[in-house]
Image (cartoon, rainbow, N blue to C red; front, side, top):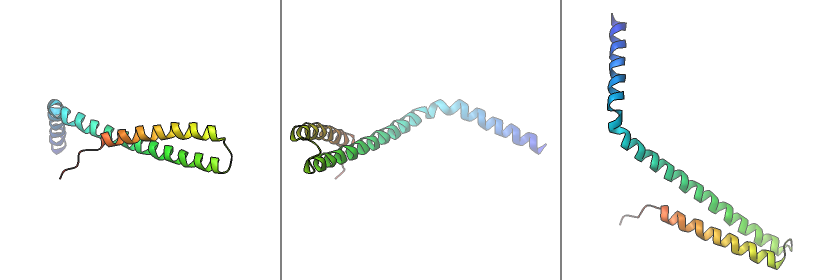
Length: 99
């Protein structure tokens, strides 16, 4: 008898949760959006670090004469533009600071 009662209670809870789940779907979608935004910010931060490392590598290659001055300038300009774009996106994604 106890097993039947437990099974009925579990099924009742499951049905209740299923019936009321649409009421909480909005909260779940907002949490998913926040989680996605955090993932995008982490991706942007990772890209920024890679671009800055590439800029350093280009500087090193120029100092050791591995690339020409023209190639250096072209790479530096392109990487600098990418870094600026990524940093602007990171600033836009940052939540406003409270005073």
